[in-house]
Each structure stands twice: as C-alpha cells, then as structure tokens.
Length: 284
Image (cartoon, rainbow, N blue to C red; front, side, top):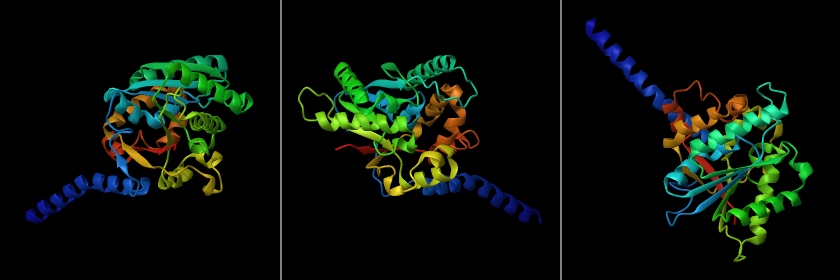
C-alpha cells in the first residue's frame, strides 16, 4: 500500500511538472505558423543604425516593444514618433479629453523610457481623426520627420488594415509606406529599409475569437486582411519588460487586455514562452 502511494505521488508530481510545458506547446501551436522563418534580429548585425518608429497612439509601441528593446541592446538608436496624444481612448472612464491627453502623454514618455528610446517625438494630430487630416498631409508630415531625423530604417503599421482595422493605424501605415516607396532610391532619402508589424494567420484567427477590437474592425473578407509576415523576431527574454511597458499605460489596461489576453492570469514564465516572438513584413 505504501509503495502504491509513493508511485501515485510520483506520477502526480510528474504530471504537475509536465503540465505547464504541455500548455506551452499547445499555446505555441495555436498561436504561431511554424513555417514562417524566425530571426534573432530585425536586421543583420552591422554598424549602428537609426530606427524611426512611427505609430499614431500612445500604447501602439507595445506591439514591437520586445524588438525595439533588443535593437537598443544591440547598440542601435531608437527614435519614436507618436502622432496623437490619445485623447479619444476613454476605456478608463476619463471623459475630459485634455486631462486624458496629458495622462496618456505621460504614459507614453514612461513607456519610451522603459524601451530605452533615444528620443520620443510627441505630435498633436487629432486622435481618431487622421482621416480628417488627410493622407497627403500625413505624408508631408512623415516626409518632414524623415528629413529631420535621417533614419536608416522605418517601422510602422501595415497599409492594408493597420493591425486590426483602426483607421488611424491604417492611414499611418499607408503614409509611411507610400513615402518610403516613392522616395526610396533617391540619394537624399536616408531610409534603406522599412518593416511593418503584422500577425500570422493563427494569431488573426485567435484574435477574432478573443479581441473585441478585432471583432469590431477587422475586414470580414480575410483576403483584405493583414499582409503575411516575412519572418518573426525572437523576443522571449524581453517579455517581462514588455509587460512593464504595457503597465505604463495605466489608462489603457482594458484595451491592452485585448492585445495579450490572460497575461495577468498566466505566470509570466509560461506566457513568455507562448508569446515569444513578434512578426514583421518587409516593404520592398
């Protein structure tokens, strides 16, 4: 009888120890397309480069935070642009847009510090109003930023969907992409490469089940959806710091729960092994 109890206890402990790894393997299978190449870095190791990251809202940078921290640790320069101050992001219940813009600007500054950005450029375009600004005006603003900062590499959203369908996201990605494609090759134009954050098909499928933002805004015709990734970047070791960046956006926790569901309920060492990479498309 005693021997049976010892064996049973051993089996129970073995299952207990094994179960997190089963969860990790299951999560990876549900979340990642394993035929997409995985890279250690966004760009090949070479001389120090200047990266210009352009997003419309405070908290958008969370989608590439791991990659940015990795680039910074490799010795590259990170210049971040936030086109709006996020005054329409009222998920926290704060209705005063002046107060909310101030809070979200402070949150963005804290997030940039956590990432290690060399400089944050906060603009004051209307949140959820980039359509009224117009694509041509946005392109001029992007071209002016590029001329001022002289980056080697651009990072932004895609031009088809803007990750999940927000008009500000899509227009920002479109403006950056069109400026890049129209001026690439001109010797006076400094960027030589551009990358867009995107998701693999399995992530889109899961997001449409779990994320209210995706359910509301993502195109019903999935052929009009996100561009397929060219590769992913391994970011597992930066996951705890990515959570810190998320938590810096205190007013947007309800929205960020859509981005990384259950991140506050699953132990970080498990979650980081499931959400262990960020996907990119290179604009050519």
